[in-house]
Image (tube, rainbow, N blue to C red; front, side, top):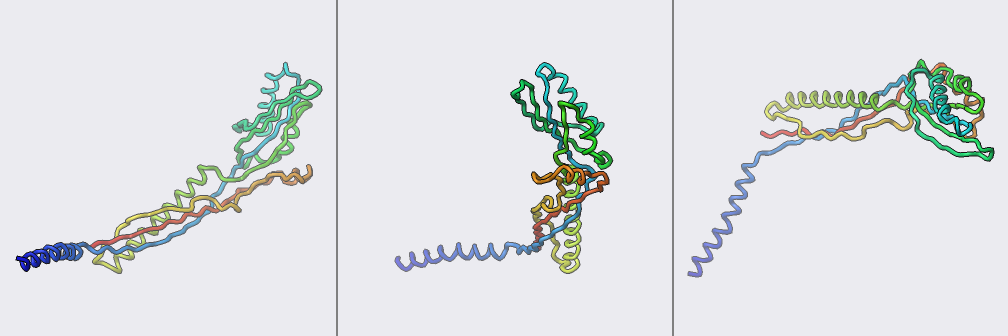
Length: 233
């Protein structure tokens, strides 16, 4: 009886192992090809974000009039531009005058950038002074996204080309796209052109920076992807 029980236990132990080995043999073998692709292109912009600072000093009863005058002043600097107030500070000086410090920004086309510093000076009046703070040529979000979309399309094209190559090299093992991970979208930091005046800059330096003959500015965008191509028989 003891011998029969030992044999039965041995058979029960061997049987699952044999089944596992058979399952491993039946499982299809999967081949993976891992690629790292990187593409780049230039994001071109023909517009710039202009930041204007307006300082106003006036009697408090004229506040409604000053609001209209500030908007009129901005329109003189760049007619037709959409201006947005991004900062506003209000105070009263020792003489009892209301003081406003307003910062506005607008996206201007290349044709609107000429002579901005002179236009800000000409639009100013006693008690209402405008100055160009800085000009930022960083491409817009829409311009960046359009370029990134082109880069993604280029990566897809390269993946398709790689699949065709694998089909010719291994005709009996059809490969397919298993996974694509995109990383590193964005602009190179040193490609942005930002005309921010430094604190040590003198007035004549600002005049020299005036983009009267501004040209289209570009920034480089890069896109990387890890691609896994898989094949099962």
